[in-house]
Length: 103
Image (cartoon, rainbow, N blue to C red; front, top):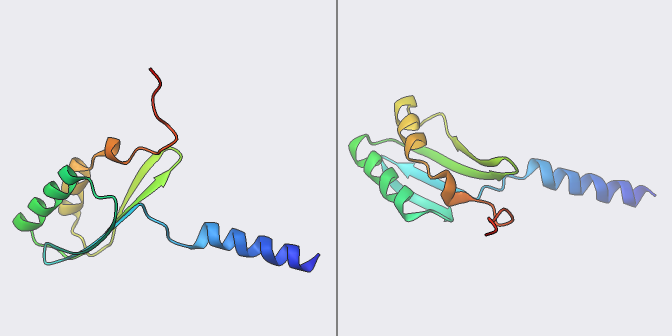
C-alpha cells in the first residue's frame, strides 16, 4: 500500500513541478543564444527583428494549455519589449494537436 502512495506522489510531482514548455528561447543582447522546441518561422523573424531594434537579454517560454497557449517571459525582458513580442505572437502557430477542425 505504501508503494502505491509513493508512486502516486512521484507522478503528481512530475506533472506539477517539472517545467515542460513547448518552446524555450534564451536571448543575450537581442540575439538568440539557445532555442528548444517548435519556433514558427514568422514569429522567429519578428522576434529577431525586435531584438535588433531593442537589444535585450532574458528567456521566453511558450506553454500548451487546454485553453490555448501561454507566453511567459523572464523579468529581465523590459516591459515594452514584452508587449512588442506579445503583439507578434502567433496563437494559431501553437494549436494543440487534438483540436483540429473538421470540415
